[in-house]
Length: 57
Image (cartoon, rainbow, N blue to C red; front, side, top):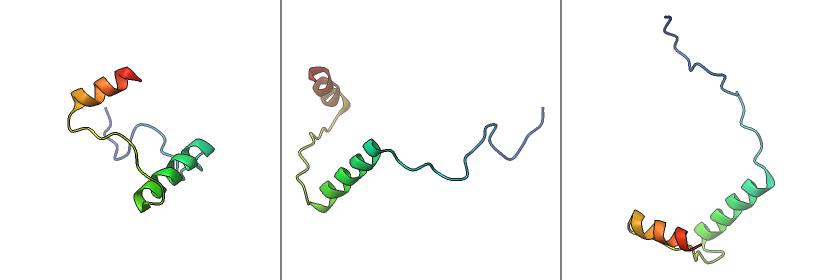
């Protein structure tokens, strides 16, 4: 067995351009962070409440 100082898979040198869905999600997140649009996402203090909310969707 040879120990190498690199991962055992190819790592792309550049990141591909985000697709339309990803760009839209990033823009929405930034707008919410800046207060340009309201952030009406539910907030949870524990995993149980979050999972119960997801089960109702």
